[in-house]
Length: 290
Image (cartoon, rainbow, N blue to C red):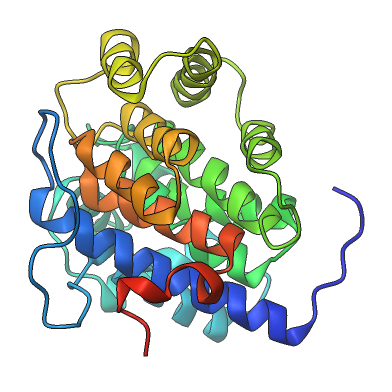
């Protein structure tokens, strides 16, 4: 990327947009998480004008606290200590990582030892924070994403997923072209990893004129997993929403209607697209804005 200048007002709007987009997407996808068939949502269920609770956001607040506490040189080691003090989720990769940390294992071993969930979505959904603390600097955002992801996904696709999204979201503070943003994200992960292959195949199917349902079926045929939280298929569904969506609302609906890890796919797409779209201009009709 060329050198960019980001003024304070624009930075605030994009951070606020990303936060709101994360809540909007997570609230849409949360109630149907784990459904593995094609869904038919056309808007939100009845809400009380509040976003749903979401561990995807909670863990980023823990990471923000670690960054405030330890500063810019923070590494996975400091993040691990923060988890020991503040994280109590027993689920999947979180539970395995916490067990390993309590045994005295430090990252990346805490994220790899005896952990069957290294390829899953627990870390890709923590990407937005690193873009917000390193706007217009995808290399720095990807570095922080790596430090975060190896805590509970070392050696797996979860690491690549978080780096991919962090780079996209950081670049979106300056870059306005969607396809360029996706290519920037791909440039920070191995070209032959499962995540990159799934995204590149999806881009090809989109260019060939496949509709979104055909593309979804092809993702599952070539990159699918019986584990609904497996990262490559869900990352592809996130990008599917972005490629096929006619606007912000349609994009997150298509991502959710692909099924699988729906709170993660819609929340990450909501944040990424909101940074890209500038949420104040495009999302006021969703009535989750103050």
